[in-house]
Image (cartoon, rainbow, N blue to C red; front, side, top):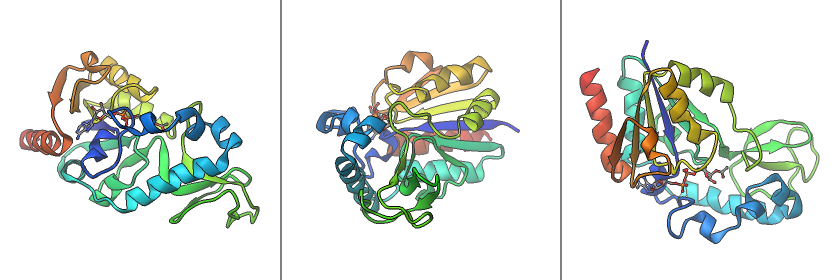
Length: 232
Ligand code: OAD
């Protein structure tokens, strides 16, 4: 059965109102990523890190999936083969649009992880350095269940296997500046996948793709999905 692997980044959620990282005025122009997105930053100032992710959790609740998220969910449901969506995003917009076969390789804002008992659990409100873990009862041991710089992304075994089997690899709304996600196009191409980048502007790794489609995700993703389904 043919497999489409889709990698998404912040650009797919931009038109829902979620901030991207490296565009002008993006998150990393306002925050020092070493302070808010590394284990060392968390150890030095957990309150700052909690505030950063609490703000982003609130922002996520205020936004809705857009036409690009919905088109990708439709592709998963209608395509005769298999579709796996891998997102670097920690928002929940793909699942709210209806995508089921989804990997959050950089974790999820809607979950926390206990560094004492290793339990993961759903978390809806603000998180602080003083909250008790509902599972082990200890205080001060919960962190956002997100992957920080210097940590390994989640589910890399499943991702590698899928990239080796993919017939089509799509990269949508990502700058291609963070590894290992930036290497996925080469891995998929090595085993024969057609590779397509859909992005507002050429990314840092655009030349690695067979095809590039330029434009806002809410326009180019639905049109591309329609073309795949028409040929299916
Ligand atoms: P970036 O902010 O690096 O890149 C967003 C990309 O989306 C850029 O290439 C934009 O041109 C494009 N873009 C912006 N608006 C768009 C739109 N409306 N339609 C289509 N494309 C659009 O975000 P990511 O590539 O997702 O990791 O960043 C990767 C990782 O770096 C994130 O997961 C996060 C960050 O640091 C961690 O925090 C570990």
